[in-house]
Image (cartoon, rainbow, N blue to C red; front, side, top):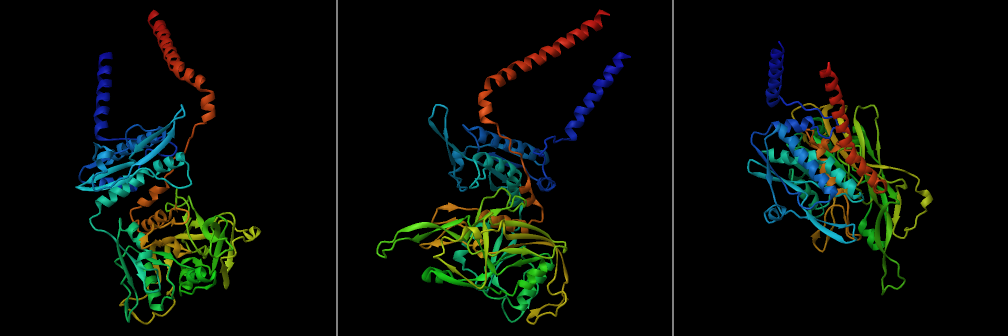
Length: 542
């Protein structure tokens, strides 16, 4: 009888082992679900019908932080392999940089215990290849203002999004289209060049105006999103109607609107410029959607410097950097996938934004805001370059919203109005829409780039201080969020707790920890062995 029991137990174990090769069951017991992929990632991986080759270039003599990033990347690749055929390829970063991918290494300077400085070159990239197409996965997110540990932790948080974004691009058989609307005094292509360069990785970009004798109400239907960047003249009733009905059919819009009219040319030549409300004809329409761009400007103590001549001799100018409160460095929200783990965003002449209609069912999230020391200048008014030392006691506002995302089913601004003249359509007005998304920014400057001696500068680059801000990432993420039907952008919300060691305590208690780590495993094994010996001795003595 005992023999049969042993055979049954062995048979059950063999069956369980066989089933484990067929059915894979995984439990993620970590509190931050570090080893779990989202439903969107699993769906994307299951759509693959060919092997995915992954070449990890992060290798060599790495410090502790980069070893952690490499380990997390390898664990992510193993997790991807559960749902798709992942082929790991050994790569050498020095060889890859010679090809068309053009990857740049990161040089790390570290101080060793003997006081000497060590220099290490690393390639924080992975290459994904699927059906003959390649995509680069950037593993390291280097955000200005964050410490090295915080940047590495943010990089680990974004690993799933980085790999899924690359795979999504590799799987695309048709490039989606977006449109930048023109015809209202918007900046020229030279000042939106970097905007188009950033988005061209993901989209085909068209530019054009809605003006004409007859506008087809479906003219925008082929676009996943439209961008309205810093218009200066009012939209006609027919244009507003076409945009409104595009939104009702599920279209997404990125609005970058100035709330006031000003002249930078007059400011530079005369030293001051009047500011008045800028009427674009969009106030009522946006109010219906649950948002209002106020005809005012925010000033912030946390701002960019500009060069100011402090010399009394016109023949010998003395340019000194002075804080320009009308160029606030905007804070980013950690509660949105658009701006999570993102640094400051550069801007100039920004208008505050109010959310209205709290019971309209629209989910609103603040994306960008001022600091804890701000003030609002209303219109009509004046901006004066001589006002470089404003009264700090007047900066009493905190976290003034200047960019907001909206998601939900919007009500049409034309629900109870006649169809405007100049619109060609054969269907009635849609009074309510399907679920879609919008982003409203209170300044066109966030999307624009400067030029210097005919050369285009990147978005968010301040040529006076030489600092690069997060404008490019912000705008790219905003458009990806607007067009994200697969839910991939939500992966940017993934959080991994940053658990840092107490360096002082680790140094002071190093000997104690070493003794405990060395002796305790041996002591536990000896204790278990002793208990087993005593139990067996008592059992067989009987």
